[in-house]
Image (cartoon, rainbow, N blue to C red; front, side, top):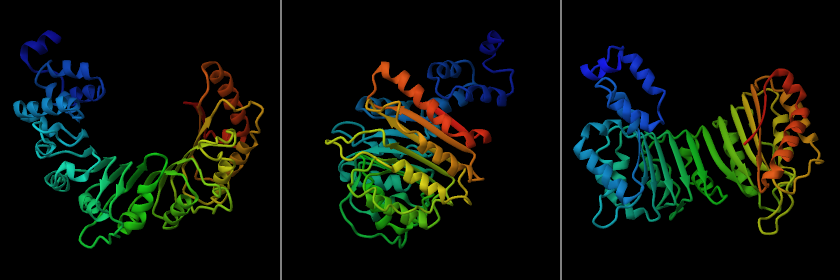
Length: 382
């Protein structure tokens, strides 16, 4: 059959079957390249996967991709994701020239410190990308929330901000702009500055986000998230809980999480000792999250995940009764379909990891008896 395919330059197989086979190789670049050379019917689907995501993070990659676009313009419609976009260097290819030639671009990742370094024409092109659904800004100082809002237009559904900041604190009321952002990720240096400021400066965005991924660093960040949860709009939250505030454990409010579908908490819990260079330990934060779950007997929560870090100071004799409290809280939630506990090593030597984590996994699993009977428990190591 291989000889027949190569000689006839076409395949006797149905096109749907060929596409299905090639779809099983989305990340196997060498095989996809080979498939693209088999015959004409193999080429379109293989090319679609080969050029679905393009990285132009270096001047050489940018120039190579620009040259390829000129020699083979048919690949432009295959590019759905463009990453590594940075300001152009003198004498090099401007990112504007590449961006304006990608009519079906859905995801864009931009890294720049100075907003103006990308050029006004670049941001104008971004705002006019009709297929753009996901926008990521890394290390960017944004002039104002209104500028960001106009950039999002009414098409972007996923916004990711990492190590970003705003020059102006002017509140954006979204007079002529609408937003459909449903997934908001804010990260960088363990601070949810972007999230906190966006929620306060851009009410329209705050009222559309369905999923958030943020870091909880100080008490006021927890209070800010409570405000958003009280709106009843959020459905999924992912938090990295690393408090460094001396008052973070005192009288924490109970969060309104009944309407959430998924909760993922990454946390250093009571097994860690205080680090004078990093701040206070996370004493009691796991129990506080469990208290929140205890108020959710009638809820929409389908999945609860705790990613717990263990360090070299952890002792196998530590008290595991806190997981029993989680088990009892989750047993009362009829909507719950999965409790996921991920034990993650932190600052452990190779010899310590096997014994310590194996003991920890068994001890945790032994406490989750009620949930085990329902078959909704998963305890693993990452």
